[in-house]
Image (cartoon, rainbow, N blue to C red):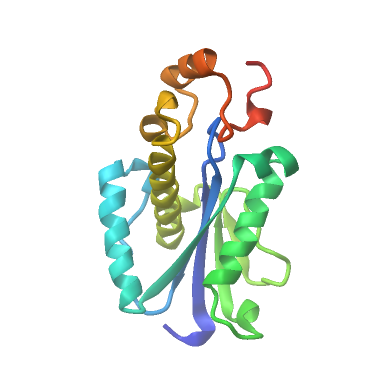
Length: 196
């Protein structure tokens, strides 16, 4: 792919859960690769893991790169969800880009939903349901989702009573029952649980 036409896809995951971080993935294409994904949300957890392994192989071959930044529930409570997402987005975008003074000019940024890149990225486009329409956004969604899910499974060992490995922090019946029984953990977003 021509240096002047680097494309970065950006998507966030974990906007709605009651517990755990919000995560933003940035995915950049260096060389032409087959991007057959259409809608990442329709993939099963197992399918996402298979894609993640393939993406990691592409990364080793320098065909692509990606970065996922997670912002904790504590920070979400402190600065609000929108600012936490923006903080994660800015960091992921800066980490995934080549280290050159004009990288903001040489890149096209495609973002899902209501996301926006910093103003210096003149060539950016926000696309409603972008993860269904742009494979590079779908791939950003996959890496963010897989890495956040893996984190929630890992942290579940510390807080087994909440079953984070099953619901990943989302507000399932099982999760609400655990909250009523055990109360709020340090992993929970207190600002999401004011009525509890």
